[in-house]
Image (cartoon, rainbow, N blue to C red; front, side, top):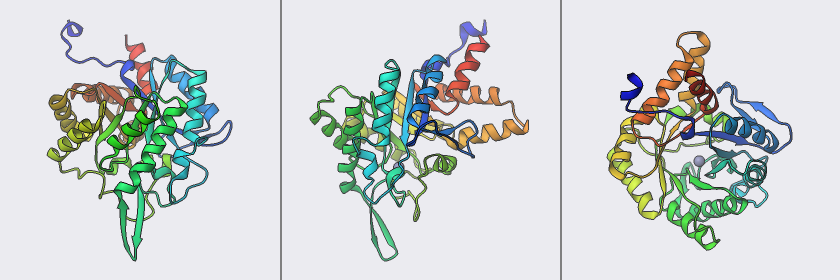
Length: 314
Ligand SMILES: [Zn+2]
């Protein structure tokens, strides 16, 4: 009877698995703060993506970690850069797998900020408009490589329009944009910065990411991204921002993604390892709550495990 009247369903078909690509072969470098998560060379990404796909997870979200970083994030838009290279390989080996590419510059910048930086004495400014061109170049480069969805996460103003224009100019008229529309300046990203090696070396990201106190502003950010051409929007983090997720879905009705971020994953893993919580039950309950709040798409490091748990629960 419970299953007849259940309001919310959770299925692996809604999951997206984030993966971290770095140059090399047969490389699996464990991320200490995220048990079960690795930086992987492209060949190992294919192994991991195949496991996910076979478990019922339809999509991956790619991040790149280049060998060399500089002050113009050249690695982000190099035609043979790590993400472009990995996308090509994935589309060749697993053509049915949906490949989403994160678009940001922080992993490729020597200073770790998401945009170009101007330093004057001790004052640091992230330059919004000059950054847009580089983001658009990166997006076009991934689309050229075969990416199915482009997902800008930088939070610069105007980047969705800039990316849309560049994609269209390059003939990628049908490549959708999933914008990280409401991305908060959150302490829940801590473990990710080890995974992506993207911690800023000075300052913080509060001048471009959102204040966790602001919900109305989140709705305005989402509205702007939709106006600029976003096809899908994202709220990040997920669990501590379910009210935002609910309001975004209710207000705009667009396909809406939620990113269950690194600390959401690591906290459950750590407490589970101690035997303080039931890891499986807490993971599935968290994902269900994210669905209930309005997410159509859930980006989660637990995608493969959760997919298997859901199968074995049936
Ligand atoms: Zn970034």
